[in-house]
Amino acid sequence: MAQSIPLLLRIVASSVNVANRAGKIIRDIMSQGELGIVEKGKNDLQTEADRSAQRCIISSLSQQFPAVTIIGEEGSSTCEVPSDWLVTDSNQEVLKETCPKELQNVSEKDVVIWVDPLDGTSEYTQGLLDHVTVLIGIAVGDKAIGGVIHQPYYNYKEPEAVIGRTMWGIVGVGVGGFVPQPPPEGQRIITTTRSHSNEVVQAALDALQPDNVLRVGGAGHKVLLLLEGKAHAYVFASAGCKRWDTCAPEAVLVAAGGQLTDVHGHSYPYNSSTPHQNTAGVLATAPGQDHSWYLRRLPDAIRAMLT
Image (cartoon, rainbow, N blue to C red; front, top):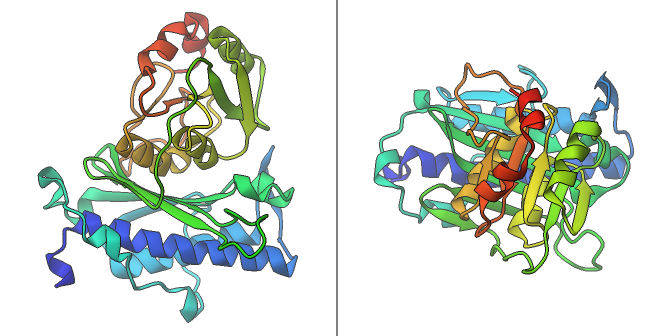
């Protein structure tokens, strides 16, 4: 019966449950207090939570979909994982959806999965836990088609609340796990980087004349602010993020009616041979916002710096 369900739905449905398990691993490691921090580069940290969550995700998905290409932020890993890290079940709500006709016959060799096991590592080490997300993005050909965003610490400050939530989206299908909200009218709220700013990043913000700027960690968190109606746009005029940062958020945002491009208005490709760096920055807009308005107001001098 399961094999009669289109591959894309099965991958997204599995990724929802895998992301939930990865989130629990992240919480468990934090509660144990041994983060195992490694500096990969300037302002680029890795923790045991990053490494373990990625092992869980890649091991679980590669076992179920062996011919799919999986690219993870923390590189490849062939280590065995504990049996309770191997997720084999799937989210039943996703499996009930109707797959778009053009995606019903996708094969495993057509799919690339981009994994950021812990987006917002710096914030994780500093205790800013609401910035942390687990990102699993599914691309078919060049396009981000499906995405899962898991917040391990959603509601963590609320006593007796259920901690964590998972949102998913499939372009042409819609979104699940949450209900998108419109941003407030009559003002312009922009979210951008918390820790990777520079003169060019600030100049782009100044050109857009926002009423308020939300400086937060993690691409996943920034896109969630758009979906939650807390910001109108996500603007980052820098080459600082990678494909695994944007694949899942782009798919969920587009599935909800928003848009994510580089600062030239071009979509990033997500095939297996594409460069990992998002060299032309990121511009994302909430559902209902005029993406072209932001593109037109970014100075040509800034665009010329980002190619």
